Length: 511
Image 1 (cartoon, rainbow, N blue to C red):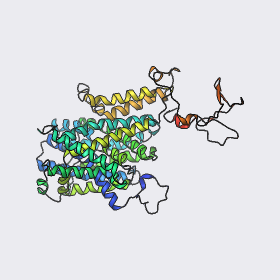
Image 2 (cartoon, rainbow, N blue to C red):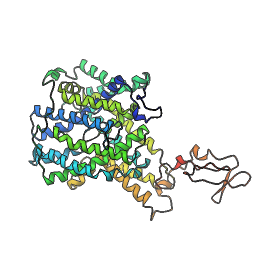
Image 3 (spheres, rainbow, N blue to C red):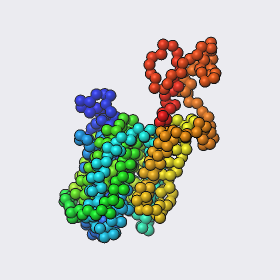
């Protein structure tokens, strides 16, 4: 049962519900397990590219966990001007991996990477007011496309996890790994169907624990290395050297920051849509500023750009747990893991195949949430259908062909290598062109719209009475008396019967 936060009214925002210490810890740990593989992947890849020793890579991972935890707490709890106060987990953004590897491979070193992240994040912090004023350009048409694409682009991650995670391993794609993933998936489904409300909401975490226990019994995971290495390790400021600033590296990283701002904007709006809470320009701006401030501070501890984790948006959708205090508790767990490497090694022992089985449900739920949002869009006599089709198709290009942009300029490839940013940018542009810049729009249906089945929803005809009929664009009752047709936004009390043409039917229109 959800407990109201002390002193808050019953009609509080859904994200402000405090579930209590035990539930916060359980659900928060579930968030950490969901995103753990993603948050350690970036420092692992960059550290290896920089030629760091294994113990130094371990410190890089610990720094990323610590910085991600602090960023999560800032984003969820908020301070004046910083933090959207939504259940969003923050961590190292994967968008900058290729750029950071290019910087270290070009001889810049870790100090040049950290300097580029700091400088680009500072510029990003200064331009957030521009991004915070774009909420009117994110109707259900755009947010639905973005949420759906987030789910679809994350599915390959779940599949790679199910196959074993490490593509260089001889066990990658083995029947044993896929069977373990399938078993975990079955456990998630059984717990969701047969369990109580609490068990159902914890189905992901419980399935991961059960799957790991089975893997341990079958010899498919190894906890022997958990005791190796230090128990406590406090991140040392500027452990990897003081940052250096190179113009070319900063420009490259600024492109990454622009992509991060687009993706974080999409994630903030997506989670707002999923938990059914209001996200206005102020709240979006506070979230983006928290993102950039976290990215500015993270290099001090040896970490990189911070952004919202899309896979955790899926966890919010599948569990229905909307409390930001749950995610803030997950942030505390991340900080603890950053200070206690031994705990990180325990979590790291969870087999990737187990995470893959759970990930199929998680990421599929994100796509399903996007489809639900797109169901609010009006597809009659407009181009919204082709906007949805083109944007999602464009977003699938990097998934279907990861090398598609290899021969394009580096700045272009950096922006469009992400299916999320590709779909978001295409949806925003097409929505502007067709639904805002209406000059030149045809008054005829597009061939795509005309080719769809014509339907009427019940709410569109609920206000009609027996005998009502339309003639020459006007509505008349059975006695031939004209019934006024009011605009969707006209909510004044009528003096006589009026026909309200269903506000829900035009929810997707930007006009």
